[in-house]
Image (cartoon, rainbow over all chains, first blue to last red; front, side):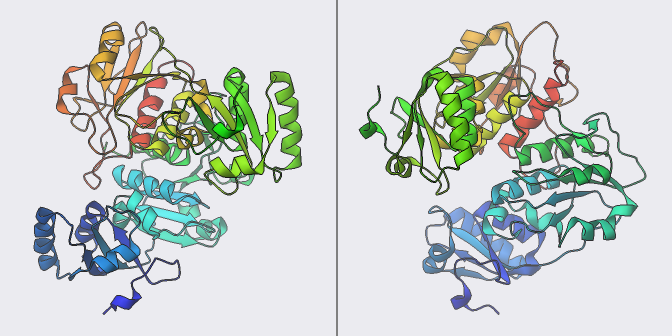
Length: 247
Length: 247
């Protein structure tokens, strides 16, 4: 059981984190109720939301704690009236699943947006390569709109570690400004899983990744330096998921 | 000539705004040097950047002002050592050009990211429908990485105003969760311009937009509510620009 005094501004080393806002908290309740320590509510929470919350928490055996003081201590936005306290967890990726691999993602908002796109297009397995923004940082959870709780995420010390465990069994597609293939030219094999690999916001992937698999470029005009990372990942997953059946 | 005392935290009603950071400021210098009032530099700006800046400003006849006090007064991030002060401007959209239309965009970061995607995929004309986040807010300019200066942007009181001026001459494609056509099913006509129309972050487009043209859905799993707006717009422009020739 968690003590109220352990609820304070989130730090990376904590074993728990916070899911802010009602939409993401309901998502957490639906996807992984077993990791919730408690749900904090503010007295200003709308009555109809509280009714719905009480009902769902009763079913899922989750405790609701009404405390303006605790919510005000941790929240990122003034208008946040509900937050879930949850235990962080680890997952392993599926060997037969398609992956997105993010090498050194640095922006919490981008990471959350990317997770939302993954879940939206049927990718449930994400690898992140250190150094990386903390996947359970409240800002990531919020930007993902709770989609992070639908995801298997595994963190690797280096790309070599990821490659050793998962690389050889699959097709690897690093996305690079100097990629060899134009996106849309490549059709993924039906009988093998693939990994879509993306570099970080400022540097992309260095040229050593040209050898990692079939490198892919999303062509754009010379008037921009590159696309926003979350946009590039969104387009990559969208294009590949065309062939995957669900779209 | 602008007075230093008029340089203060940006407000929407000001006739000038700020472009923060060296990459976006160089973009402004290349795209629209004539609207620059001055470029502010901090004494901590890297020497090699200052050399390059001096050279380009001399050619473009732009004044450089070194003032830590002024930069510190307006900057959004501690590490911002260069900022351009520019006059805001209005542009008209091209009747024969493809447009992106954003109805009530509410997030500055999303708007900047969308502008970057537009310019990256060859869309140079953007309509924004009020109420809207201010297109010249420094956060928009920064998130666009300066791509905003390559764009024609026109602001409309309502969608009806936009439609009256531009709607009848083109194909209109509202993007909606309940759109009739799946993206990828539609191939734009070669001899007519099109408009891709998107709603705001929380509400999307209401059902009245079903009549505005051929409504389009980007299919996604039921595990997310919607894609992030900037991601959806990126995918929309990407898909349509396939047929446009430049990709």
